[in-house]
Image 1 (cartoon, helix red, strand yellow):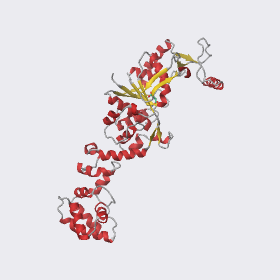
Image 2 (cartoon, protein in one colour):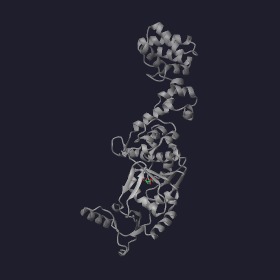
Image 3 (cartoon, rainbow, N blue to C red):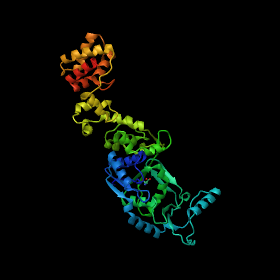
Image 4 (tube, rainbow, N blue to C red):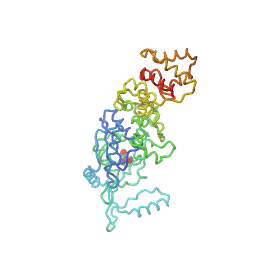
Length: 439
Ligand code: GLU
């Protein structure tokens, strides 16, 4: 069996972290099995879907590195839906209904008032068609046996179909609701695994019967627990965190994906630089049932850890010109964002502001400015400088190193001084020490 997954967003907005997580799990699962990952644009709602969001979603996936193997658009597939719909109508699995929303609401209240589940009551076929009304269409659920499946995340699932309303699949104006086209597409595209949020569990119950009615085997189903904002409630804010925000904050796609791949699973969240590694590790059996808490601060933390692990080749194209592998290896451990590299690179080769030093510190730095020109720079100059100063001033530890660091880098802390001195070269170091001593 060739594994085929699909990610099926509606182009009514940009992707947020919840969608991105679903897309990621679909992409990873397909990759793990050498299968196909399809992007299905669910644009049956012509009023709310836009070409901008359609493009935006594809851009978002590209930036994340989750480029699909193919893209299909539901609005291109209405003929197929029509054909399958006719088939189901002829076999009696979809049927015409004429109630208005108001009438349905009255029936719902009556049933609830009687302590009964507010399930749609099928009309007897012979009921007269109300004058002037066109039909909308429902799928007839088979009430003869329970709907059961073993969900890859949630385990055994069982629904009593008599407690479900026959779902509306098509409106009076001929437009499609989500449920049936999705199943028709899954059959037509050979989708083997449907991975989506648990808000779709009861849809799945109805959809499993639709697969059967279309004469097709049902895919495996994996319904993942929802993602919630760290505060505990699915907040607007979570919905607003997407690629634009992550990218705008200067964070790496793999920092976000490293978190989303394993958040809410029993696997530890780690900074992983390679999608293949995340794919190899994916197992729905590791997914928890409780909502997973998303915290942007975790992405920031992972971003730093990720940068500390990245090789020069991974980032070379995005570094300032002239930056070498040695520079990268020296500086990467101090980066929280890749953009920080340029600041540190300037500390090596650019201008720095000489620090304000106290009298004792200035005397120490002046001494250093005398010694530095006499050192052999090819032979551990930092060690030699520190040794010489220790002897001549009697200072050691922080009292010795801190003023030197500030004079040489203009900063309070940073990468190891030995590496920095080596990279900045003798002339630059001597000039900075002299400038600080005379400031
Ligand atoms: N367009 C649906 C949604 O965004 C797709 C659900 C599915 O994966 O089947 O919720």
